[in-house]
Amino acid sequence: MKSMPKRVKYRKSQRGKIRTDACRGNKVNFGEYGLLSLERAWLSAKQLEACRVVAAHLMGKEGRLYIRVFPHKSVSAKPAETRMGKGKGEPEYYAAVVKPGTVLFELGALTLDMAKVVLNAMAHKLPIRVKMVYRRHAI
Image (cartoon, rainbow, N blue to C red; front, side, top):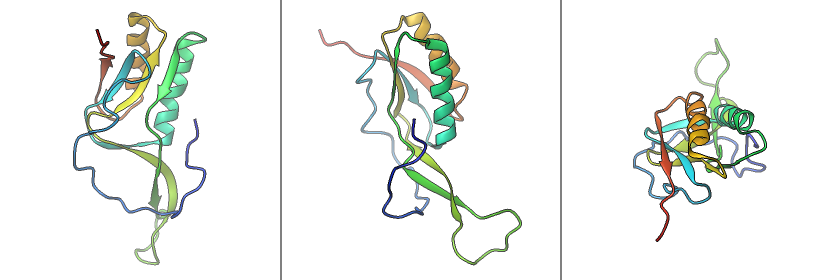
């Protein structure tokens, strides 16, 4: 997975606030099982990559992983022991803005037991509370 956007119009972004719950990206669309966020947070590219690595390790060749979030937001920081002022710090890393109700990852072509094991391992890599959700089949 890429850890940052290819090109950005502005290198530094404002922090902003995550006010509402997710009204888009809140359903399982691609796989059979999903990992749904219950809290609002910024998930760094390293955290998302750690989830991807542990899922790939546990699934092996079987199954399919869909990553539904991308780290678009640049998070800047000033160096340690630097006096205040002299402008905004340089971008340190990129983060994905996650609202409550956002589906973060989806799994397909796996059994229910295997999906539970994989999603539980991925949940341990994240700093927020998450829950497992299923796709609703139309009858």
